[in-house]
Image (cartoon, rainbow, N blue to C red; front, top):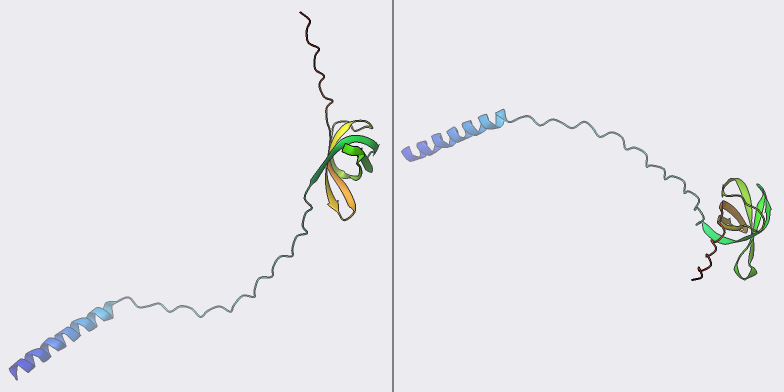
Length: 130
């Protein structure tokens, strides 16, 4: 019986110390109620796909400033391009000039984005006679 009394006192002491430790533990803060769910984001409208810029070079067959340019390339292939206010010009464009045209194609319409006049090729100097 004595033994039972010692075990009971020991258990009460453990419970007393444990409850004191639990009482000193920081209180858990309650999380505020969840805010109402935000509406699902609306996907951005798809941007129209930009046509890949293409390149064509040759000799100017016809040119109307601010309107159109016709270029004759290899194997007498001739292409006409619309020229807009956004078309970048590099050099003086005139008939017979060698040019490189960067353009974009929209359906059947080809619009020049830039026109560069190519410098005439340098002529090789004649070898010196010795």
